Amino acid sequence: MLDPVDRSSPGLTVRCARALLSPWSRLSLLVVLLASAGAAVLVYEPQRIIAAGWPQLSGGAAVVLFAAAYGVCTAAFVPRPLLNLAAGALFGTQLGLPAAIAGTVLGAGIAFGLGRFLGQEALRPLLRGRWLTAVDGQLSRHGFRSMMAIRLFPGVPFQAANYVASVSRMGWGPFLLATGLGTIPNTAAYVVAGSEAGSPTSPAFLVAMGFIVLTGVAAAIVAWRKRDRLRPGPAKPRTDAESEAEDRIPQPVA
Image 1 (cartoon, rainbow, N blue to C red):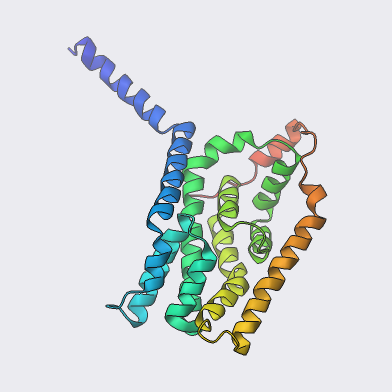
Image 2 (image 1 turned 60 degrees about the vertical axis):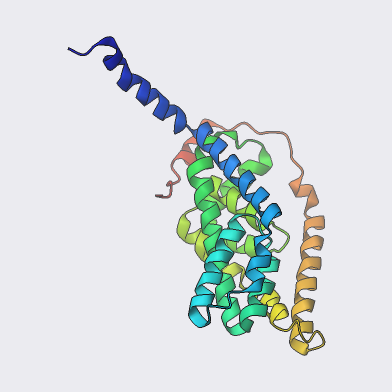
């Protein structure tokens, strides 16, 4: 016969496991991870290490290693423009662009996965208000199209888009594909600028910088014209029909 301590042990273990795996515990872990990553970037400045390259490696091995480091650094909030310039300076346009795109997709996937597994369950019940519910509905129902527009629009912060998408019901496939395709134009401009940085008067450098400036100005103009739509309005309570319709949206399989 089990003594009282033995009979209570399984129940205590289950309660502890449930507490550790609860939505708010996982969200707390996500906050700690993101804060630690941001602090590490400020202290160690990994973008400088990446920009220095790896003299002992060359060719494909160096490109693969760079793409992996790019992805990790992007997930840790290192600014992508700096990494794109480094890709162009180290490998030129021909190899630098594929490395930067691969690193971009990898970094977006890491952030999306962290937000999906650690934050989605706790944050979805908090989606209230006209603007939040509209964004969530758009990303959940039209994931690929919406993410393509976000990636092509340079005014939307890259990491913010990753975590907002992870809280929605968008699937992995549309998110990663739209990220890879939508970031090509802006990424290519920075990579070309990095590869031609040694000759700032060259046509390629001037065209790349002109594209970067024009897209930035266009983003600012669009954001200014759409500012009224971004102002939060009075929260509109969801009807039972709307709640049931949302529940019928298929949840992506992890």
